[in-house]
Amino acid sequence: MDRDKSMEGVTMIFYWAINIGAFFSLATTYSARNVGYYLAFLAPGLMYLIVCVVMVIIGSKIDHLPPQGSILGNVCKVLSVCFRGNFIKRIRRKEFWDFAYPTNMQNRGETYYKTKKQKPITWVDQDVKNFHATFLQCGMFLYWVIFNLSDSGLGSALNAQAGAMTTKNVPNDLFSNFNPLVIIVLIPLLEKVIYPTFERLGIEVKSVHKISFGFFLGSMTSMTAALIQWRIYETSPCGYHATTCDDVSPISAWVEVSVYALAAAGECFCMTQAYELSYTRAPENSKSLVTALFLLTNSFSAAIEEAITGALVDPHLIWPFTALACIGFVSTVVFLIQYWNLDKVMAQEALDREHAKQEKLLREQQQGNELTDQLGVDSVSVSTNNYDNLGRRI
Image (cartoon, rainbow, N blue to C red; front, side):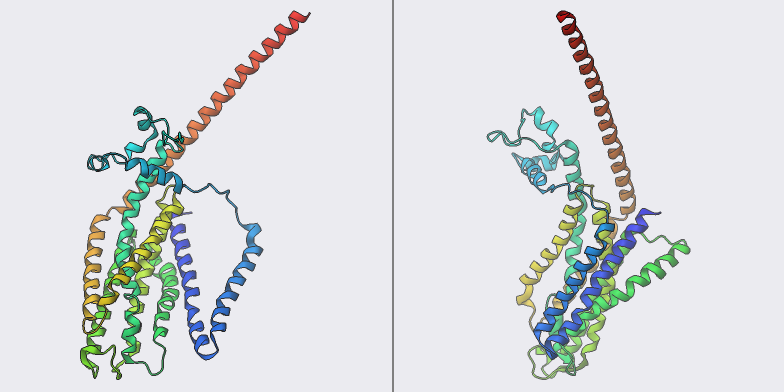
């Protein structure tokens, strides 16, 4: 079984399942409007209840791994050591992380993490190497901050855009439900048809290709939104003040579906790969940390959206979308160049992890043999002493 193919399939199924749940928000929209808000909240509550029942039923069939504890404490301790003294100079010399190696700390006479409180050093050199690799890998995730901005449509800007067109009593937030719908349809096509077809034709589709194509679709999402906004301004009775106009543009609001469809297609390529990379590239004890750092990009994107909300007003709504499209396209090209050899790097990382694992097993085996030998010597010494004592008593 190909482990990489298996991980790709698992992450795509995971993302597909997430969007099935997201699509059910369509039902809650109409429930709140036609029945009442109690049904809109009751429906997802019942869905969670079903999940609990399913987990109870299949719980005995799942392999339960013992908790390994959080590494966040050691990460904070290592970073606090790295930032001691003239850390800028160490960054320039590429010795930033080396400063926190326990062996180097002991060579400097630091036998404790905090000398005054005599707090012990709770990590080893390999832990620092893993943290270093983790943060290097997570630098890639900064590109997703830009994609998230395109994917979300700059917050409520797309809803306002739909409201400035002819909706014929269709709720503005209905169109956003086409994002999960496209994902639900497209992921099985990619998994069962498109990717296997490329494989049969001998065309290798690497992770960097998928991510870059997803970023490109994200930039086209913003460009499409900019073109739609331009057409709204051109056809609205109020011209370039269409958002606050009492009369709407004759353009059908259903054209907004194209924006959400492009964003959804981009997610199928770059978001699924991000989940896969955050798991496969992370060290064994850092997988949760890497995933958390990837999800942190959503917070950065939300903060940027909040910061530019004041600028999303008529008559300038075309330019935020246009700027985001240009930034997205440039970041796509830069990402493709920077990570062109990503698959080779990942293969080398896998070999290094396997080598480190073998070395760890070998060290543990040697320590076990030494302990066994020591116990054998102690047993012989005890037996000899007992024999001597017995001889004296006789």
